Image 1 (cartoon, rainbow, N blue to C red):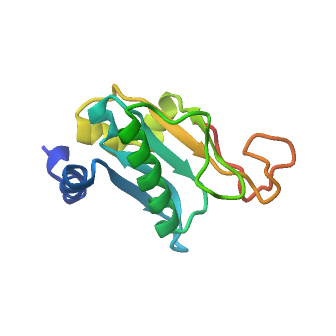
Image 2: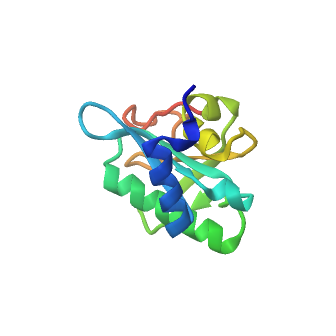
Length: 146
């Protein structure tokens, strides 16, 4: 039987959580950009894990997740509906449903040993300020609401 709590990935995540308060896991597609990235460890403090979907440069999404996670842990509460990181448009947030835990953040559940945690999905505006799900959003920015 495989012990999912002792995989190299989860050992690295544990070390990151111990050092920084959260770890980040990204699934990278063939072109070197993640199709999804999420945090692990915020649920230890009763906070949601953060999920970003889309065509991100790895360092950019890691930086965004680190910054939002740090501010969230410092405040002791989940982020509001909009997060202003000084970009042209703020990042919009939404509470993700159970599909997020099944399809995207399952390693957080493996790390925690349960699936009793919340996930906040981050939505990024296109160059004209339209968010996924809004009319005429640039298709490159459209992501599934999970």
